[in-house]
Image (cartoon, rainbow, N blue to C red; front, side, top):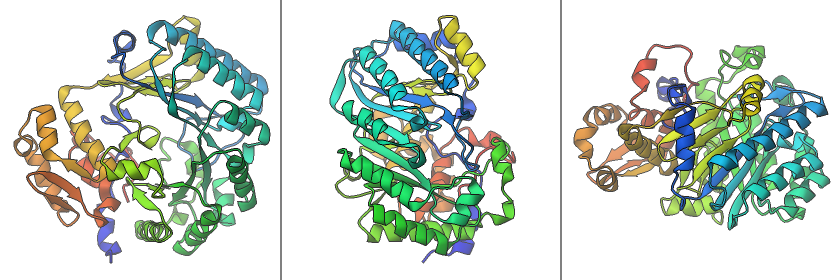
Length: 453
């Protein structure tokens, strides 16, 4: 059994490592010309992963950390589509769009806040620009069940969508009221049933623990209800309370947030409950059924992590399209403008709306490999890392391994491998942080990252 009281001492600010270096290292030093050069000179044999950010929501969910725009104006959304398609026109001038597309994802915001006709307009434009979708391409969309109808589903079916992720967070009425997201169980079930009836065989459900008024008992009931819907995957996220970044989070009375001890109890119960009901823990916050490709990727050590979470589509260049989207290549990250004014101004000037990023050094690439291997597979092949980067691992990471030794009850280190045990998976962010070269400058900085526990 976990000693929850002892675990509390490990609660400290730390990255979620959807990238390394993290977005806090992005700057204008990696400028526009550098990004364009990398798009033009990319390896033509590397496939593409396309991410489209559709930022609009009807109203605020107070827990949300995403970059969203609240509106009820259809014309505002139509204008955004106009600019999005113009961005695709500009992108086509700099990127070989005949490269194979292995993944396309619509995120938000609420992508299904757009009408079926609006969604189809975007998809048609994408398929015209990128004609070479792989036969097994993962085509997915994030969905708020409160904004999802048969017409939208017909569009997804028509264009080969095969994976849908439903946002739920919590089924408890008191929690829903506090987070400003009233979403009855019946609404969610009807949305999933609609997807299933139209051939969607991979359904994910997002839950969040650490929200106001959550208890072990209340979240246990949420899990039981969720299981009745029978998703193929779960993503169970630790709520990131960052009120210095997101003003809506200031609406919460922080005394109503569950303590680190309660959060750990919820997490432990979630792991045990889902495992007992046929799911396998994938990475730090995902669960999948044994037939799911995420499960197979974990089994053979090919699981990858990016801004969309865990994926089997490693080795692809990620192209971020739309407001605030982030792209990723072999040696860079590049982000679009977060404000609509800058986004539109760049496109009006005939430029991609890229505003900042980071160019990875050789040391960054090495540490990215180590951190992402630990985050995705709870293990690192040391010998393979030494061969790939031509280093002596134990010399190169002498000080990092000394820091890691403070977590020795959760990690084993042999000459061949670093392995994280089952209890250590609860602290995988802490473990990965030992290899993060940038963490030193955040020591003592109060408002940097969300808490790891």
